[in-house]
Amino acid sequence: MSYAYRPFDYVPPPELRGQTPSDAPVVIVGAGPVGLAAAIDLALHGQKSIVVDDNNVVSVGSRAICWAKRTLEIFDRLGVGTRMVEKGVTWKVGRLFNGEKEVYHFDLLPEDGHKMPAFINLQQYYVEQYLIERAFELNEFIEIRFKNKVTAIEQAQDHVTVQVETPDGSYALKAQYLLACDGANSSIRGMMNLTFEGQSFEEQFLIADIKMTADFPNERWFWFNPPFHDGQTALLHKQPDDIYRIDLQLPLGADTEAAKDLDHILPRISRAVEGRPFELDWMSVYKFRCNRLDKFVHDRVIFVGDSAHVVSPFGARGGNGGIQDVDNLIWKLDLVLRGQNASLLKSYDQERIFGADENIQNSARATHFMQPPSAMEKTFRDAVLDLANRAPFARRMINSGRLSVPCSLAHSALMTHGALAPCPVGHAALDAPVEGGFLLNHLGGGFKFLGVGIKMPAHLDHVYFPSEGLMAERYGKGVYLIRPDQHIAAYWPDLPGEKSLDHALARAQGQT
Amino acid sequence: MNVAQDNLGAASDDVYDTLLAAFDGLNEQEQHAKLARLALIMVNYIGDIDVVQDMLDLAQTPAS
Image (tube, rainbow over all chains, first blue to last red; front, side):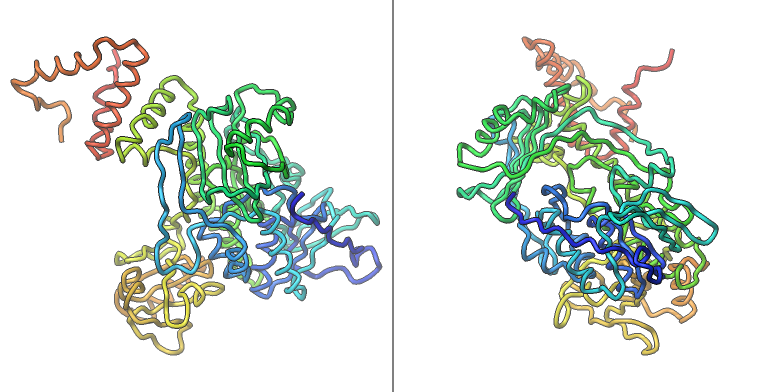
C-alpha cells in the first residue's frame, strides 16, 4: 500500500513485569481517532489514562476521510489541527451527474475569518498517526498499550475492572471509568450484552482507494445511475498522496465476493476516471446500518463514537460525530474525577444522544435519496434530479450526503437562556479573527467568559475582544459564557450582576 | 391561511382544463413523473412547511 505502515512496539505491561499496577483513573478501549482524542483531551485536563488496543498499527485503508470544520477545531484544541489541515486536501467544486449528464456543479466558497476550512479529506491512517504522535508527546499522562485485548469486564460500585490479554499472558486492569471507543463492532458492548437498536440497510458499497498521478481535477464527483456501473450511485473523491477514494454502490443482493473480483471492478474504475492510468491501493466492501445504544453512560462504562452509534457513511458523520462525543464528554469526566457529582455525566447522554439522532436522521435521508426504497420515493427522487438543471430550488434537494455541522445544544438543561444572542446559546462558538490570531484559540479547555465590547471584572476568568469587524458581526456586543467544548452556555447583552454569572456557571456545570 | 378556500373563482374551469391537458398523451410512468415534478415546484413556490402540511392533510383520504 501507498502508506508505510509501521507497527508500534508491544511492551509487556507493568502488571506482568511485577511492577506497580497503573493508577490511571481512566481506561480507554480502542486506539482509533475517538479513543486517542479522548486520551489527549484527558491529558490536557491533567488526567491520566491507559489506552488498550488489540492491534498495533493505524487504520488499514483510508476509512473515514472527510473531517468537518468543527472536528478540525477540536483537533486544533488538542494540538493536531494545523498538521491535519496542512496534509489534508480541500475540495471546493462538486459535480453531480445523472447517468452521462452533469446535473450541475457547485463551488463551495470558503467563508472568511475562520482558522479552519469547512472540511478536509485526510485518510484515517494519517489522523491516527498524528493523534498517536501527539499522545506520545503527552506520555506523562497517556500510556498506549498495543496488542492488549480486553476479554472480560466487571463493574463494581466505585470502579471497573477488565481482563486484558497480551502476548505475555493476561492481567487485570482497574480504573474509575472505562471509555469504550472500540468502534461499530464494539467488543465491550458485546460483553455487556447491550442491544444496538436501529435500522439495517441492504445496500452494499465497494470502497476502493486508487493511486492516480495523472492530472485529475481536485473535485468531488457524484453519480446517480452511473453509466459505468450497475449500482445506483458512485462517488469519486480526492485524498492526499494522489490517492482517490471511489465508492461504488452495489446492486441489491449482489454477491460480495464477486463484486471484489478485479476483472469486474477495474474496468468500472477506469471508466469513472475516464481512462487515466491508476493502481489499486486498498479495497473493501461494507454494508451499513444506523444504530444507537439506548444510553451511552452505563455507570462506570461510557460509550463514545461508533460503539455508541453508527450511521451510514454519507455526510461524514461517523468520525466527526465521534470526535464531538469526545469534546462533549471529557471536560465532564474531568470534573467528576475531581469530585463533582457523577450525575453531570447524564448530560453527555442527553446532549450526544440528541446529536447522534440528528446524524442518524441526516444519513438515513441521504441513503433514501440515493436508493429510494419505494416506487413513489424513486419517482420523487428522479423528479428532483430532472428539475435540478433548470430549477435552482431542486439542486438543494439533491442529497448525496449532507456535510456534518455541529448540532445545537440549545435544549440541554445546562444552558441558561435569556436575551437572544447573535451567536445563539447552545451553538458551538463561531471562530473569528482577533488581534494576533483566531478567537477559538482563546477559548475551550476550561470554562471562560467572553466579553465582546464589554469589559469584565479582572477576577473573573475571561477574555475580552472589541466588538468590531467579524467579531461584531458574529457576536454583536455582550458577555458570553463558553464551555470547555467551546459551546455557548449563556449570553447577556450587558454585563450582569455577579450572581447571574455565578448561577449560569453553576448551571453549566450541572450543579443546579 | 385556509388551504380549502376557493381562490380560482370564474377561472376554475380553465385551470382544471389546463391541468388535465398537461397530462395528455403521457404514459402512466410519465404522468407520475410529471405530477411529482409539479408537486415539487408547487411546494417550493409555497415555501411554507406549515401550509404544505395543511395541504397534505386536506389531500388525505378521509376516514370513512
